[in-house]
Amino acid sequence: MATMWTIGADAADPPRLAEFWAAALGYILEPGYENDEHGASIVDPDDLGPAIGFLHVPEPKTAKNRLHLDLRVAGPGPRDALSAGRMRSKAAELVGLGAVQVREEFYGPELGHIVMLDPEGNEFCVG
Image (cartoon, rainbow, N blue to C red):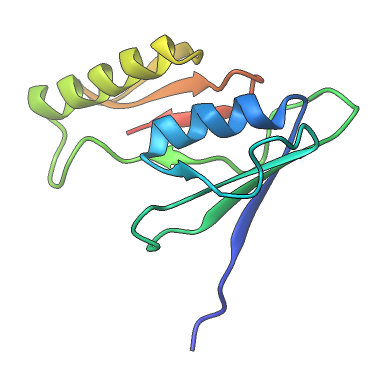
């Protein structure tokens, strides 16, 4: 039997980061954390993916995070104009939620993934 697991993330503003990632992933805010400025958690509404917890820490982010999330929206198969459109559309949606688009990375002539920063500067990719 597999071990249940959760992703934990440090945050300056846990509720804000939880709201961003819930919207980005199609998750919901976990009940019980509504008024807690020290922590927040999001869960998959279908209970398939892991929960993600955000814990307030006083120190700021100082370096590139070694572990990050990749949002897989391109679809199966080789990269093409359709997959590039899906990636760019999701990146634009995330910018509207407070993310920053850093750059596009190409696999040969095709868009491979888009490097982004969440509202607290944590790197992630849309691929």
